[in-house]
Image 1 (spheres, one colour):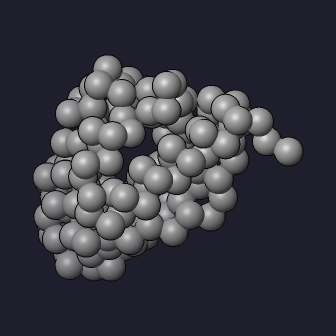
Image 2: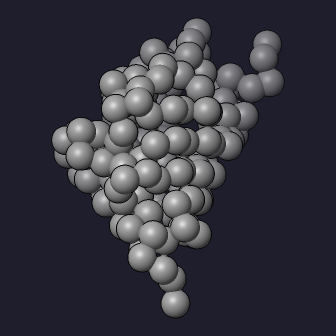
Length: 142
């Protein structure tokens, strides 16, 4: 049976994902540490991560997420998920210079989080960036 720390960590990540997917951006204030560290890339801190999600929403429209697997152990949580959306803009660094296609896309991720005091404190990720670029006709480069 999972311990209390593991269950709190699992609930924090699950609630964050559910709320952000529904458009409730107050989840950043409630569930992400102000000094959040994003080891994956991009701007740091809670506001930096909020900006990353804004770019994602801007470029892939009203995307949906499908969680395939969530594993929690103590203060760490791993999530395998897929984002599905429509390529409507190219403002995030990965898509810089990629012509907008309007194509439906799927982007797969493995996220790892560390939870501290009931908030997401750190984040690591592996993303299938090449898979996304292939769907947009941007890989291999011309």
